[in-house]
Image 1 (cartoon, rainbow, N blue to C red):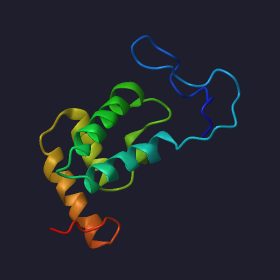
Image 2: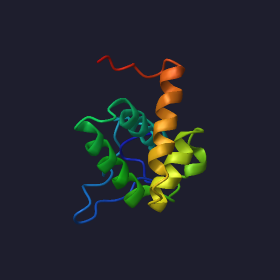
Image 3: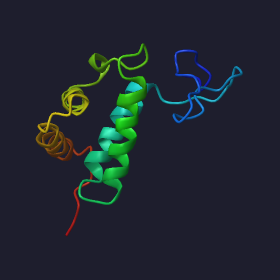
Image 4: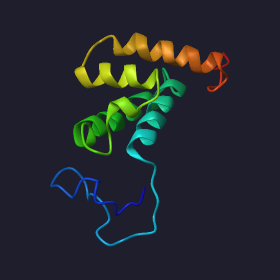
Length: 116
């Protein structure tokens, strides 16, 4: 997706600069893949100071682009979708769902195992 894609939200006071105004060759991840990447980072950085940062960025995704044409949770992969849905609803089951996803990713060797 291009940073000037008209499907991206426009600049809004207090919510960032929005999409690039001119046609731009700058490519960015799609909202779905970016959302999955943030969830993956949440899993990787479990228990670290970074975890709250990734959660804040993911919360911005929910606030600003959830339900738009660029972010339909049905397009998320399994595991990610369940966590995102619980997060969106403020459902406390999001934490066990995230832990289960984290264990699955470690089992599949898609996440490093923390030593110590």
